[in-house]
Length: 627
Image (tube, rainbow, N blue to C red):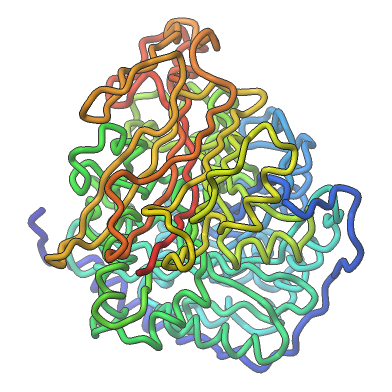
């Protein structure tokens, strides 16, 4: 897209420079103390339970939720996660059909909670000029003011009166207290958290846009940083990691989870440092120590694969959303290269071959990024993403300017984890070892192990999972070269169980990536387990599972598909001399997309710009093989 110089950003920058200043450091604030749990809970299991949660929720304490009239609090978000009804801007209460197991409220650290404080007329902040314009009843005035707020974040020039230490510190302490208040070990686990909102901007061209480099910072608990490190401190993720390393010297355990690589314009998984320099071992180790997991599916799209990068993958075109950040119309599209996970996994192998360290050796989860104080994860229970922007079917299906972009947004994903119990300690440790998986919303259970000696395991054995841990490595792990065994290829133990209240399963696929002997990255997809007695063709394909969806009524049946799919599989093309990764993709049978549910409710035709049906899915974290 041709870009032209725009005078508006230049004038706005002058305004920002006059009214704003760089942020305070906040690095020396004392740590906060939070709950720990040391005794085993009733559901403790050595071979681990599957838990489902959301590590990405915003409330009115985020400026970009407040702008759209969201007034929920962190307490509301935690109550919603536990299955309670909470207020919604539509006027009707919203509620999950099933509670989650764990949750983290991740309000933006930039201007944390300040907008809500401006609303309170007894608060001195409400008397500021920016507060008066933000709270102006004329939406044209208030939205322009919020545009200035967003611009100040993207350009890293904060309003100095809105980031005073006492304001941010007090709000952060209340955020941490809310997480502690709702923590019920063994039943519902909460984590102190926030979002670091780095959005490097191209604001001096038109259309304007910003690259998404956001990370959610999650604290294990016990000790929590006394202040969040925001993008006002630095927009460089490497500086965030340095701050995280400093926190660890204080006994604080934490991790950062990047999200929406799909709208990073190729920057999230670029094969260089943030400044464009060549990576070294220290960089790769720092990145993986601080970012063991990435969020790969959510409301703003899925970043696992892209048809342009994986043209032979018939299922790569899934909830693709590539608009960069910004309010310009039309939105600038994000480039695919450097923005999608499968390519990053392959690039990581190539980088490791060159320098000895892999910067993209991470696990995968889903979450929502919902800005209503709620987890928007159910296709038939759509609550929208951002307050008055999209709260009702009538608005979401309208012909308004942003309607098509709203409809291209997804219902959010879910984070799956294999942990010994539902506690902060057990779940956080599972994230650190990358024994986690992502789903596009359903609670599909996925197990994935690799070993040189699985031939003796039988799924009918009650202790098959115990044996798998004993002789193999789970998802997120490393499989080393064979030693004493005579096996020519490792075995992969694979098991997928449908969501008990959702659709049946279509198939399980193994996605393999490797660097060939010419130094080129390669990928291949293997169908390894499927339903309905279909036959694998000589080229490894299987026919479509079928489709039971009635589009007009937005209903489907489980007359096709399987409840469980499982197998022990060996790579028929395994080469012990080549480094590789393997991960699972599990597909459900087709079901109605949320837009089809909306269309049925309004008795109108389904929108043409999105598919009428969807094959929900799950992805495991990879297992890496190193020769």
